Length: 153
Image (cartoon, rainbow, N blue to C red):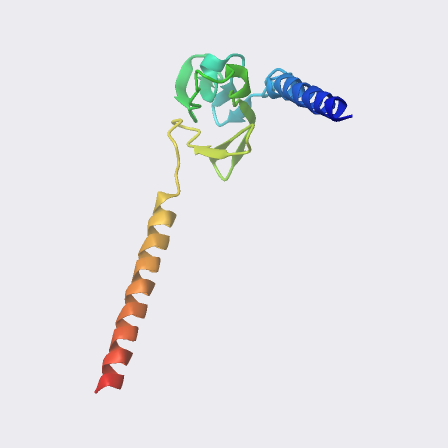
């Protein structure tokens, strides 16, 4: 009975490993993203190979000439892990409030200026939050020190 249990556990372990390997690999092709039209440009995401993951390009609608080409994000590939399990392609692109929103398969959003392709970041908001936090910490420390000094006297 003990040998049978060990055999079943080993069989389940092998099955589990093989099952995970099959489903870890990319079983489907990356999504075909429809072009986004903005002013006089057509914005496209190739999404066909790992070499162009995250690349967004804008073409003049009238001349079909490349206006700009930018990499919205970079995926670091670990050579010790299957490459196709690490690939992250663009899932969706849309214009919101005159900004190009690029969403990858991990649902991470990237904001680009549709006129230039330059990244739009919210660092100003982050800096403001940090400054407010530092101000509050200083206030609490000074207030605590002042109250402590007052109770000593």
